[in-house]
Amino acid sequence: MNTRFAVATHILAYLAHAQGQPVSSEVLAGSAGTHPVVVRRLVGTLREAGLVQSQRGAGGGTLLARPATDITLLDVFRAMQDTEPDLFQVGSTNPNAHCDLGRVMQETLEGLFGPAIEAMRTALAAVSVAQVAQELSQRLAGCPGNPG
Amino acid sequence: MNTRFAVATHILAYLAHAQGQPVSSEVLAGSAGTHPVVVRRLVGTLREAGLVQSQRGAGGGTLLARPATDITLLDVFRAMQDTEPDLFQVGSTNPNAHCDLGRVMQETLEGLFGPAIEAMRTALAAVSVAQVAQELSQRLAGCPGNPG
DNA sequence: TACCTTTGTAACCGCTTCTGTTACTTACCA
DNA sequence: TGGTAAGTAACAGAAGCGGTTACAAAGGTA
Image (cartoon, rainbow over all chains, first blue to last red; front, side, top):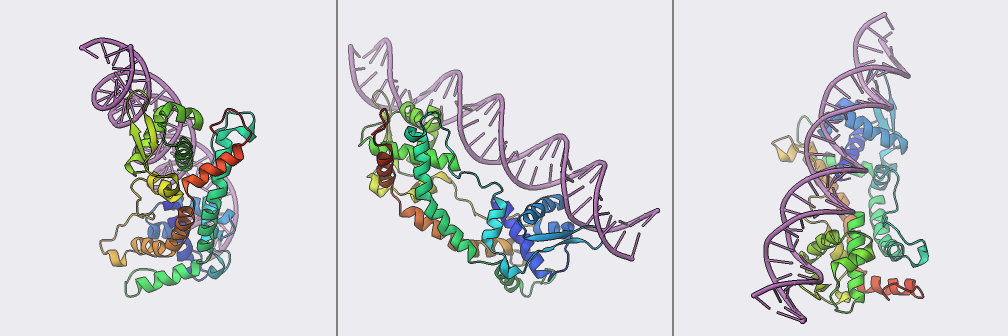
């Protein structure tokens, strides 16, 4: 999930910089160092999550669906893990779920691992795409040819 | 990594319950619902991390390398992600690393994502294998046939 | 010593996931 | 009508993981 999350954030930060102007998948792919179709796939996921909008046809492209200050890294994180599975899925063979060691272990781990996930979510929710874009601008200050 | 982490914790909790008695990979595999070789592979990783010891030959098996109270879920987590890569590795094409958007994005994400990872680590470090084993025992109380 | 047990590992297969790519359809604008 | 660009299907290749078999190495026991 590393690359997908990184590229998705890359795209959103780029869009935040575009100030509402549609950006084509080709431009985004060139910036992120990948293929336009890969970008369109990721954009499709982000669109389903309500983070971006797309416009077809000439002059079309993708733009943020809401202000960059209202999109957090947690939104991106959630969008990237599509179905959000059970986090700990261990095969169960015992028909008596209450006494199946595998299932009890799963429940126990979920209970103990839950706070860790929650802590990470809280930290991710504290960072907005606007902050990412701003930090990028600062780091890229003085570098010609880059979007900023 | 879900299953590997879950099975590894399963193994450690079982060993904590064994009170220093070596447990064979066959027994562990039966409990975790997997294959003995898979267990031995995971145990190998845990051994490299210094969490368990192994004894060959008749009556051999695996046992904890230190008290269960001194092994945290963070230890298990770290052991399971072998090489601990750069977390955000995005291909860089620009020879000027300082001005390469991909690399700057990577650095920025690492800086912004770092606190989230750190928060999760802190939460994981707060849970010991002994706690997992104890909670398992409580949940399995009254269920015959299980190790407890 | 001979035998059995158990770990340690290599090797292979099958499955899943992801990336990269091509090709085609659909939609929008001039 | 034609060009542009998203949407999407389809395929190949790479990578990771679980399951399995097979075999070598080590350590007890008769």
